[in-house]
Image (cartoon, rainbow, N blue to C red):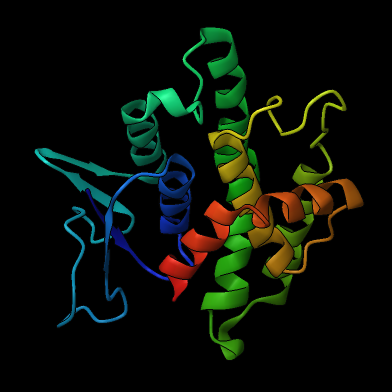
Length: 198
């Protein structure tokens, strides 16, 4: 299984999933900043992550992660029970729509836009939007993780997006901060981060 990656990108979510599952894989670092030479992603738009597994090629982070979870279904990172899966999918959907939209736009302004081209009103707008979404996150006190008592794919998508928000200076409450610390302390995350960004 080959995974095309780039530092500090969504490819971390795929590597984190693989590490949680104890899967065997190879990474191929793509040179996204060099369109002339360097390693290219087979993704139709040159993006990462991208997965190649035997005769299967998959683009888009969530599709890749679900494929991996289905392949290692005995590991319980992604439930097979319809009701449990729906609950996990609800949080993944929230992470990828409501939460990631303002956070990703904020991240582009704060980290990827040159200082002299940044637009403070736009930064303030996306920071406010991200704060509004984050304020709607309520943890069930009976759950250990976001969707239940097992760490799932929902936690990977939620915590990684919340980490982006924190990096961009969005204020988060103590409950979310504890949740983030717990997720980021997992050995699988630390290994995936080292591989993705190292």
